[in-house]
Length: 215
Image 1 (cartoon, one colour):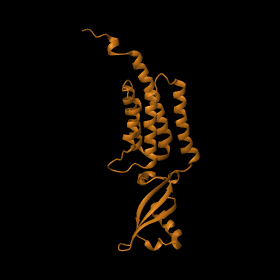
Image 2 (spheres, helix red, strand yellow; image 1 turned 60 degrees about the horizontal axis):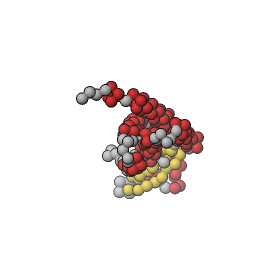
Image 3 (cartoon, rainbow, N blue to C red; image 1 turned 90 degrees about the horizontal axis):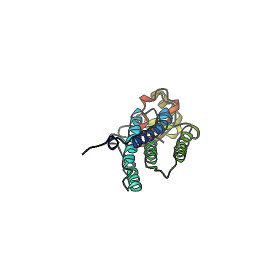
Image 4 (cartoon, rainbow, N blue to C red; image 1 turned 30 degrees about the vertical axis):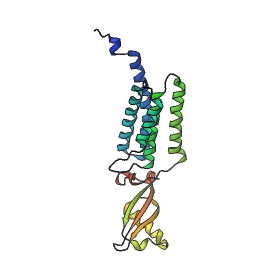
């Protein structure tokens, strides 16, 4: 049985796949590399977001002919929406970007002929614009938090709050603007202290990973 070249390679479908893939990749790079990474500086999540966006896009696009579009898309959101890595819990902000990259990939992959190219481009631009506005304009500073075990429990009293902040700033090298006292262990003379600082004011963020907790 002879197999023609058109049966092996559908040039029209291949060109469409490459163009849509390139468009989705550009949008994902703008969201993740330009907007997210410039603030967070997390290469591990940068790697994750780009690969998840690529896989979700190709998965949706290649299964587009299956009559499960809406249920399939909702299933992806349900699966990835409850993801928790074994090593650490995903912070809220990173989970939001994960949701955005999945959503954009699903939109770009499952938008059929009933969605014009102009509508698709405008939709992606709106997502990029809102994300950029929240990250760079409205939320001017990204506040990060870190839980530390503090041994000078004589400074945790409200009357010595300023001394506590000054000591934490000196010992951590971070420009801490507030701190909260958690559990106090009088047997070991230690206390759990949550410190809050802005990433924009940290000269060396790599020494203090903000993955422990972000607001």
